[in-house]
Image (cartoon, rainbow, N blue to C red; front, side):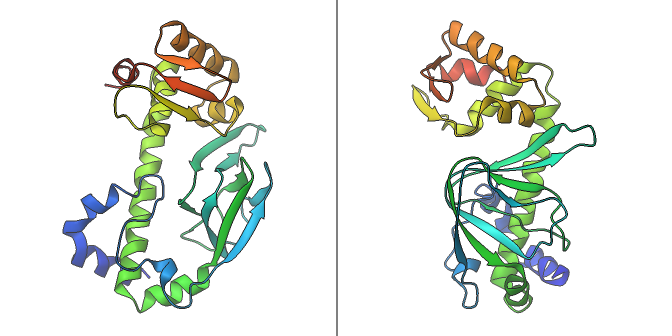
Length: 235
């Protein structure tokens, strides 16, 4: 597999920057043939309920998953009982691909979800003889590295408002004007992702509403009223 990744990187290095643009949230890069369309890569549809575990930390990484509908979180439980959410995945995203034979994190359904489960062994076998599939795996790995780096930078931000506004920008298209977003995750999930308390997240959202930047229709339905002001916290 390592040899295939190295070959893919060499042959397609010039295309990597543009293709990575579609990888930050684990989304597949547009291509003539995707790995999941390759013969031998059929998957099994799974239906999960809200808060149902998909796999646990240290479980055997025999499958990886693509989201058909719903939202998933990956997280790690610390020795003191605290939970750190590492990433959120939504429709079209891929998660659960591991470098080793065990899952490093737990994965849980935030909402009711439909997933396609693929056998990791099948993908490895196909990638060993298919440069196109190896290239897509290489790009997926690079995209996950970019995601991890972005999250590290987010956790290092100085203030709660910088963290919360950055999170909101990740979930809404920054096209100007106004937009409505629905966050499937509860505020506790947002807090555990940002390294804040749920009270701090709630206070920050309320302040953004008082300042006329957002409107909280409900706890999870938010209307962005001022994109420029929202982005200004992260310039």
